[in-house]
Length: 428
Image (cartoon, rainbow, N blue to C red):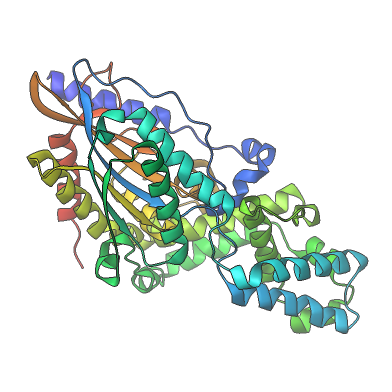
């Protein structure tokens, strides 16, 4: 009976902790509308102490690369060319010519650096590594062995390098083994968007998406402020796409170090809010627990979750590994934490206009977003405990914690069962 009551308490606490995001909050924090391009925040809640007698001995981690230049050189070129073509046709307003000038400067700065890690991104991973060592020094003792896995992407490799440099500067005797290869991509970053797309061909989804798009701000004001010739726009410009792509560049500039401009003054805050809502839906439907896709997007996290379980079991059995660090992408992190059923990641939303209140990409996959599982043991108990942090904030699971006084600490045996049971439900 006591165990049952603890489970109920855990579920109630988890629900209460998932406070809804309000429109008022978003409008007063427009930087959050950067979504998955939001630079990593260091505004953390204070961590709760481990139960008496328990000390950390192993960390299992997955980190997204840090802030980068816009990922697509093609889009730098395409958007510059669209606005230069309109300029040649005398179809730009004075404001449109301001946009032209900024877009050309952005192209000159970023085209050949598309996708590269910025200095901001480098510092983000240095900071995460520094706090990890300072918060859990027991894990990083003399000659501790660290296993590191990375995606083959250059921005991910640069992020891994920043992280390792920081670790070695603080703990020079660490023994670190790294691997980056196509061999490990099946769990570091398994993408199955085609499978999700097939799930989103149903009429219910199409109707819900159409209704949602109708609820968003029209691009008319934005477009008419840029282009002076309505007939030219009709023949040459996809208004919604143009508006959203420029907004995408705008939000990306939050993590770019050496440019002194952005594009936010071309938008109203409402327009940016609705642009973000559309992007938030993309992540929810393709990599989150979207009910219209039968949560198919989260299934791509299955191999990664299995890797977390297997490596934890090995470390607990005494294979000598103090930390397993993995470096990848938002497309790896988002399905993983949703499949893990972390607090704030599992909302089932049918009314898409209500999505932002219950599921927010910027809370899950900002630049340098990361998951850390901290494992604890005690000389007085055989139970291994684990605490899970998403972006360095402690998170709850839909199971009972070890006690009401330690709401973020769980028995590894319980967590392992939760995840194994979840993985057992996956069928193709």
